[in-house]
Image 1 (tube, rainbow, N blue to C red):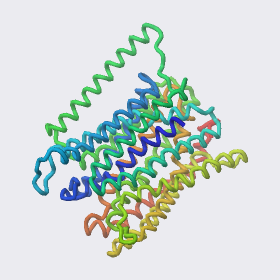
Image 2 (image 1 turned 90 degrees about the vertical axis):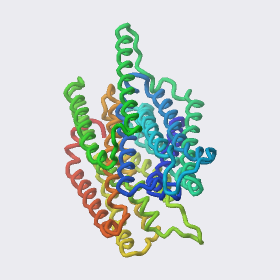
Image 3 (image 1 turned 90 degrees about the horizontal axis):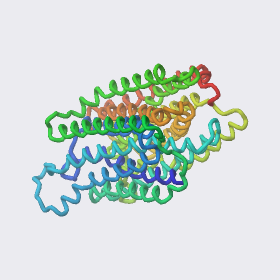
Image 4 (image 1 turned 180 degrees about the horizontal axis):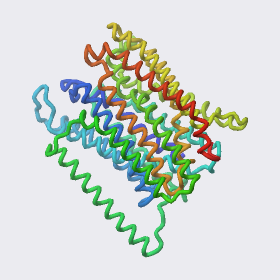
Length: 499
């Protein structure tokens, strides 16, 4: 219960802001937006959503080595709250400062508060996100089918927050974008209050490693000093970017970040396999995590079009008028969560029932099924994009059906991926392996943002190419699903008794 509601409010804050993010960046300055072009907006969106999950790896390490899982969740939530409120500050400044800004120009505080807020949310989520999922994994016995069901229920909490947030935040954003960002911060604040008030239910779970000997305490202090040194260098680098000592080009930065993530992943897995002190069985399980890392990144590169290109499709090419009222585009970000809430109990019960009859698909096969469902959803969007390219507005049902198939894909892959990572990960690398799961999502998010920059139909040329962009995604994800089906049995043999 404690973890369910904490994650619900954290996801409220994340998805509330996410529903507004690319729309705010592409909105004209005259209407309160930032006036970025599609390519820049997609790059910033991809970098931000990438970084949210990228920092899950050091966030898991901090929990494993320094402060424990529960404290990481607490401090992460505090930083997230400050980040959202920082993004809301320009609205307060504009209301009370009385300073006049020339038409067509941003106020001096608009960009600094926007980027600083994003950075704080990134750091906070990196601490909170992987570690709260690791605590869920500790609540259930190993190799129990209840663990998958438990993660499905936990996933309902995620999507309850994700359902409420886009509607609430998009409604306030009609009046002022910054009111929407502020409401997202208030949601995280509610999560912190709930977490602190019910922490007694987590006694003995997620505690930090005890350093009893003098040598262990000295090693801990040395490690802590190094962490502060790294953090100081990060803050200094950000300051250089803010004061434009180092020029920042989001599009170019996004172009090289995939390579950086791939290198980080290879180095980490290489270290764990060759220097992690693991036995043969543990190494085989780590290899499975490596393989599923690749297919997870492919899945999320398609799925995360929801907050970028599909969000812009809802705003630009969807008929949103109902009884004379134009539905905010951000409302469509709640559709996936509605379907999750409806179908998550069914999927959780289905896995348990099939497990009793020894008919449950293996986890790699569930991954493959998820990819194929995702591809079918983008096949629907191919036809919707053809309508948009012809100059007509698409009916809302095209997006709704797409999100339905994406939901089936997500329920087949995501909670299973979370659960499988906790089952396969060596205990001393539990938090960091969960971080690697989120690192795969980081890579997918970055690719999604880069695709959105060219698949959003912002120009006549891009609109004409949009159907082909969606069909390319169809070929990629369905092809990956078929490949994974073919190799699922060899992967299953590496998993040992884990299923």
